[in-house]
Length: 140
Image (cartoon, rainbow, N blue to C red):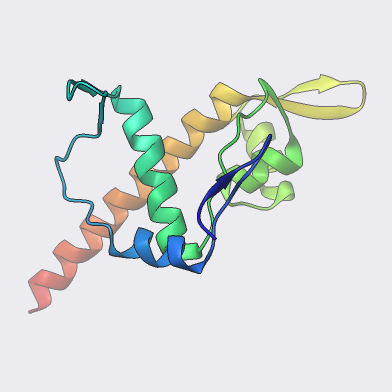
């Protein structure tokens, strides 16, 4: 069996996972489409990142999931995206680190706000890791 497209899913088998793992992903490479006449069409950078991330996920986890997040997220989904507990997320709302809004009695979050905070947290972790590496290098 090979990758199979259904109405909603692409099903892959072990051979696809193995091939994903064997596929080189060199830095600076560009994904292009080649039409029947051999003309190359470069994919937009965002689409390239999405496809490369899906390839990396298949190679590392044996699966990938691509979906569109709704504009409004529940606190559970937002907390999952941010890799924190729901109580931590709600604490951040009280502290003003992220804004939420009420729909009835439930707190909701704007997708853009959650993704912006996710990126901010990634930058913070990278900076902390770089500082740790610098400190470690001083001890060597």
